[in-house]
Length: 194
View 1: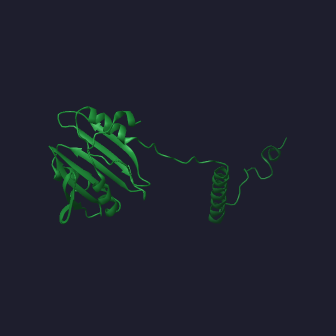
View 2 (view 1 turned 45 degrees about the vertical axis):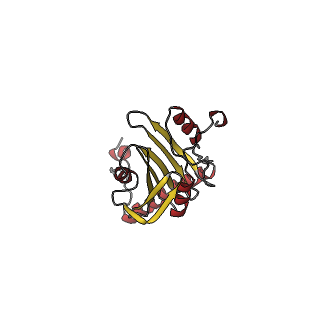
View 3 (view 1 turned 60 degrees about the horizontal axis):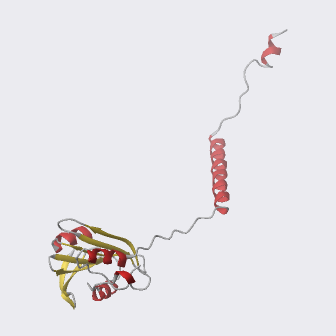
């Protein structure tokens, strides 16, 4: 047998033309195939709607009241608001914390603790927040001081016994003021809270 019949006609392996244009063309085809797969899979996938748990904050308030404490709370929430977190931290200096989502998807909260108003403001509102004494607010719970942060966050503070109560929000200032005006420490009947 001759050597040419074993290795092919020329004796060298086959070669193909390599070019930059061919490389770019194959990359474009590859990207289009991947995008097609993503679109195809997305067309047949149902993405479930996420609905966060709404916490019954009045149940927490009732529990804390049964310990002999007087937490500050709103008797009801404004339309569209819900509680996304509520907690009680026991100890020598107990704290009650409630965090709300407002109707316009901002965060608001009430924090009550035996701590300085400046410390709570720095933690929950911002270190650059300043007190604004031109907006006095007096409710059944006492005299409230107004605070504003450079980011547009708003807060109100008051003293109730040894505790400082901080009410804060990244949302509408008027809605926050309405929340502050609604706050109470009224005793709840545990049998009516579910």
